[in-house]
Image (tube, rainbow, N blue to C red; front, side, top):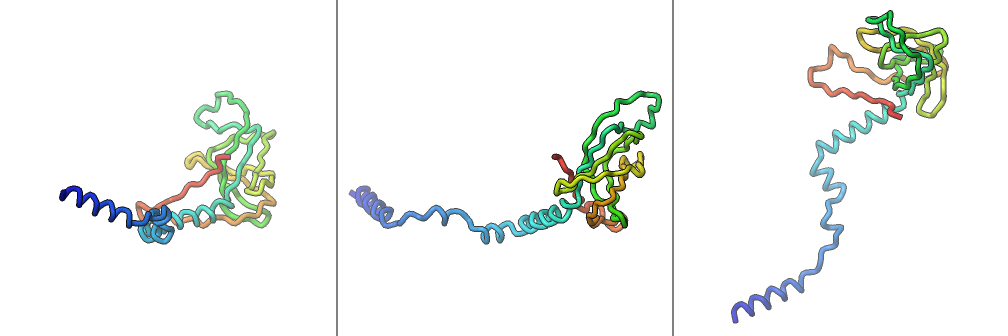
Length: 169
């Protein structure tokens, strides 16, 4: 008898509870922001940095260029095509200097084209390469992009965050 009474009371109590809308079960943007504020702030900062740096990236298409192999000068290398990402290092009066990864042997028949974010193509002229850093420098007349802000190594403490962006397409 007592069990039947408790079962009746519980069923009446359950019937009186209105179902909660599904939207109330999920946290809203404000609740998420408050709950994960440090992570959310960090992510927003990364997105800002990406948006600032992305337009300063270029794609460099090289035809008729072989990688430099100073350690094996007698080895014949195939001349082929390469596509790499580059970033504006500094602005010049007639364009930009773009730095790219790798050191490249520049032949007389080599062609370098630099493609900006909008798809505009500019002829480039290789200027120098540094094997110790594994970087090459290209002069690109007519390309007017602002160089990104660079950190000063000596002023950055160990453990500082650094960003590396590329152009995989």
